[in-house]
Amino acid sequence: MTIHKNLIAGEWVGSDGVANINPSNTNDVIGEYARASADDAKTAIAAAKAAFPAWSRSGILERHAILKKTADEIMARKDELGTLLAREEGKTLPEAIGETIRAGQIFEFFAGETLRLAGEVIPSVRPNIGVEITREAVGVVGIITPWNFPIAIPAWKIAPALAYGNTIVFKPAELVPGCAWAIVDILHRAGLPKGVLNLVMGKGSVVGQAMLESPDVAAITFTGSTGTGKRVAAASIEHNRKFQLEMGGKNPFVVLDDADLTVAVEAAANSGFFSTGQRCTASSRLIVTEGIHDKFVAALTEKLKTLVVDDALKAGTHIGPVVDASQLKQDTDYIEIGKGEGARLAFGGDLLTRDNPGFYLQPALFTEATNAMRISREEIFGPVVSVIRVKDYEEALATANDTPFGLSSGIATTSLKHATHFKRNAEAGMVMVNLPTAGVDFHVPFGGRKGSSYGPREQGKYANEFYTTVKTAYTLA
Ligand code: ADP
Image (tube, rainbow, N blue to C red; front, top):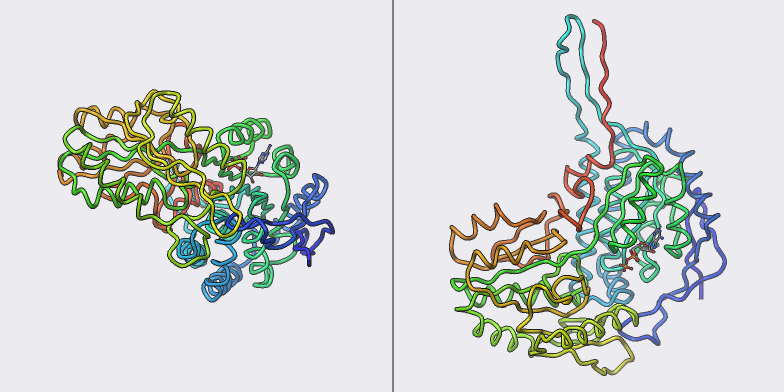
């Protein structure tokens, strides 16, 4: 089997490969992918540093052309890349193709942003002096990504980094090197100069750690677990570098007595269980007022019975497998924890057997949960959701906000008053009214508050906060 190599200083390098396994069918090896060492990471950082002066001064039309070409190729290959994504991550094919299209749209958006980087001209408070405020590239950006959105998250970090003139060392999650390799291959062939984008696939503790420890990495953008995020933060402060963190969520979805039951059930099923619950915006706490509680639980349970858990590539599958054995263990451990804490497992939670060996788990719905239980406070990152019964809107809002996280927060209601109040008072970076907590647009800011995020927002024009640094220049007329 040919080895997919790392891209360092414009060359494909690496000899040993690690097998990339399909979680829907563990007999299916997708490919062999090289594993970088700490020294490879250092070489990649040096290459990115060397490429920075020329790339940061490159013409915006050159950057536009490369990003546009990349967008076009991703769109043209959406079915093939979506299939690769579904095969290596385990989300269903329609979800995977949708994510691939999103990656294409992100490159298209940031191709446009290269032509819109503006500054400000402001009169000085002193006579005969002009002040210009401009934005410049930051330098070498370290990009560290998780496995749950293998093409969209790399896209939403790589595209703005390049658009604004930074060079990159990119370390994807070990479980999903396929999409990372494909996107880097496309960008490389689209004409990026040597060293502008370096791919170092490998272990977080080795390759990622080497990036954290390098004084030459000017900024790190990270999406992953809270624990690793804290390491990124500590190392970045040590090196006085910019950093941006997107970490966990324990997103609430409030269902009020006046909700449209169908809307509430669809949104809860989608945001709780689709993508196998492996989204940082998934809602794992359903906070339901007394008057609708029993009806809602009954309707959601009926809905869950209709959801097909099977091979991600099979037509008709609603929920694919869990991504790997260790995530599956985490999910089943939390199911046991929930039972032990006194929540009632109202549906699911069993391991499932399918035609091929894979990590199949039936969606699990707990009722009679409290917000103090571990299953309500800690991110599980699987198809495991708890229903918390509350008295009224006020208790629902207080419960929704009573969490260490603050990424996305949703409500199902037909009351304009409650919807408006919730939008203003939800302690989250994103608020959804009558919509799933997961599922966001690519051209507007993404990010959270409290323990979920740190630093400027990602995506849309707000991305320039992180990927540029501001310069204020004074000129005597
Ligand atoms: P998850 O639980 O989603 O795998 P992680 O935080 O472990 O979350 O992984 C997110 C990304 O961070 C991955 O690319 C992983 O390899 C990387 N990573 C893990 N440990 C470190 C580390 N010590 N330094 C830098 N990156 C790391």
